[in-house]
Length: 114
Length: 114
Image (cartoon, rainbow over all chains, first blue to last red; front, top):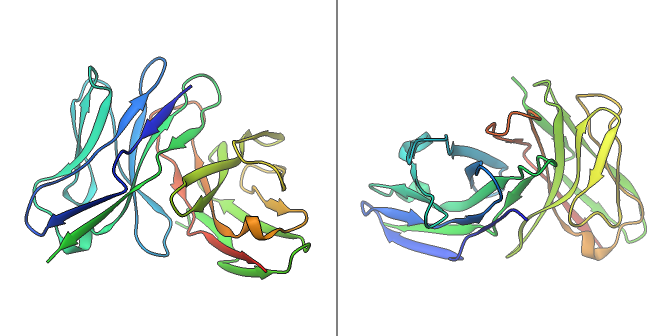
């Protein structure tokens, strides 16, 4: 079965420092991986997705994600955090076994401290 | 572009009442789905559809019904509301077989059952 895990419920980082939000996945076949962000009282917004062959994927708002096949990870990164990046972040995988469902992790709350 | 539109944004129900959460998309997406979001549990899939006339259950379908008579609309029905159904509900849509396409989310419906 396809699954994703976000091992950290919360990540705290100082403004201006680099940030990493972790995600590991388990899939059979090719991985179709996504990151979303959710601001308070809003829906989920798409940030970026893995594209086959690109180990470093660039997305919206200066975010990027590093794909590592051997470690089955797809960590979200940003070189310099902003207070406005504080939000809930979700990693997701799309089921390639025939249902086409999106399966989400439990989310990581990012808090950027001024 | 409207994208994915959910109504209502807020609703309070009494135990045992029924209601329908509306979801409409204008992107001609074949795939539509409903999730519920609860603290610490991420997004859990309730029902999904890969096209008009086709629906299937997700991981938490009990107490909910769906139908898909058109490509644009995917309503979620609560048959007899229970306090355990207090949650935030999100509708999402995407293309069906293009696995690397992201899902688009509505703004959510916050439901309280008293």
